[in-house]
Each structure stands twice: as C-alpha cells, then as structure tokens.
Image 1 (tube, rainbow, N blue to C red):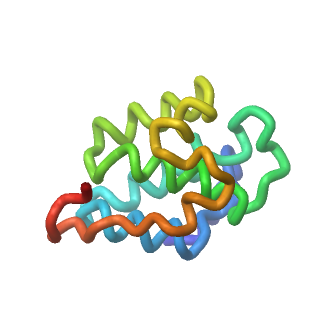
Image 2: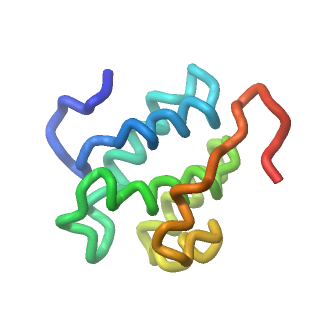
Image 3: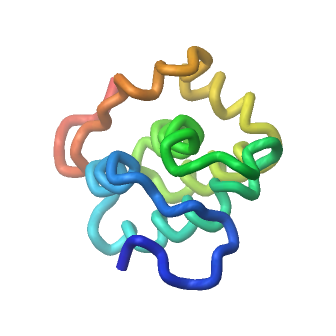
Amino acid sequence: MWPFRGTPRGGPDLSPETLRRVDFLFPPGHREWVKTLLYEECGNNLPFLEKADMYVLERFRFATLKCSKGDLILFRRAITLAKEDWRDLLMASGFHDVDAHRSWEPRPVDGPSET
C-alpha cells in the first residue's frame, strides 16, 4: 500500500496527484507495478534530482505517465528515457515549461483515448 514502506531505492513517495493519474491511466491489476517503478526508477535516482521532493518530481513522473498513454510497454520505455536523459522525456511529453505538467489531465482507463 502507498505510501511506500520498504527500503528507499528511488523515492520520495508518490504525490497524491501522481497516484490519481496512475489510477486514471492503468487498470487495477497494473497499478501497483506502475507505482513501484515510478517510486524506484523515476525518483531521486534521476540525475540532478537527488534532493527533489514528491512535488518537484511530479513533473518527471507525470511526463512518464503521459508518454505511456496507459500502455505498460510505453511506460517502461518512458522510464528508460527518464533515466537516460529526463530532458528528452520532458520534451516528448510537452512539459518543457516548468508548470506545463500541472494542467495535464489524463483520460480514465475506460474512457475515450487522449488526444
């Protein structure tokens, strides 16, 4: 259950808005895996983000989720891109502006696809 209670490997915990977006994008059977990967592989372990809190990390985690479009393969690719160079991930997601991620609202997993 979240917040994560294991040994920190990525961290910090996912923000409430990040959790909400995961729930919108992914079916129940995939959500825990997605949350774990966001925590472990898209957190303070990203270059130059060692001291970022959950709210600063929203930009990068939202970018990962947006690029995934709710697809696990695309999600894994977005995580890999974040680890290679998160600037490319931000460009791919359209979050080049520091606050652009705040207005992104994904479509529910059972709703019409995002444009």
